[in-house]
Length: 175
Image 1: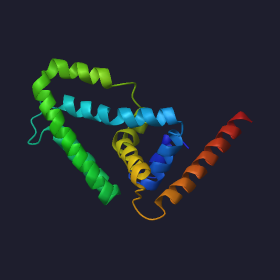
Image 2 (image 1 turned 60 degrees about the vertical axis):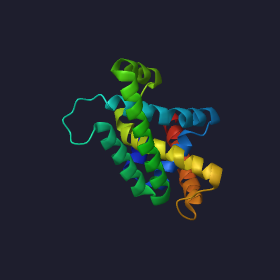
Image 3 (image 1 turned 135 degrees about the horizontal axis):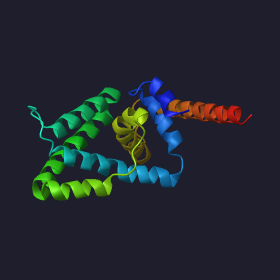
Image 4 (image 1 turned 90 degrees about the horizontal axis):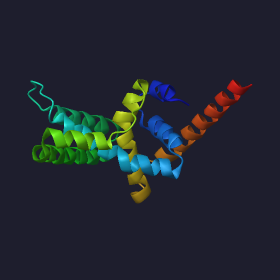
């Protein structure tokens, strides 16, 4: 299943998004890289937003932080609240770091952490949901957390169906 199929199911459809995420990050090195890099990339995005000269009553970095927190609360109240608190902490830390480093050094830090980005069609899934899905996976692995009973079983079923669909599509293309 491609990102477009995941998008059709809804960006905030937690089961579908988690199944897609897990199917795309099955290799341990890939999963570890995403777990280690996604949140620092978000942090540096917040860092550079402190320098945007927009005439808004609320700073752009805070707007982004609150948007993420609201989206995460919408998909899961408990884990979303914890992720929202982490985002607020990241916003405060990025604000302090921006004030200390200034634009020139902050920009260099941002460039050092950014990598080839996703395609435009994948933006909602990648930039909005991937940090939360990584966080949810960590909560699940470390503490056995599930947003509700049978969540992981439902995700496993969807993931298997998605992988089966992907294999069938690949098979049809080769014949």
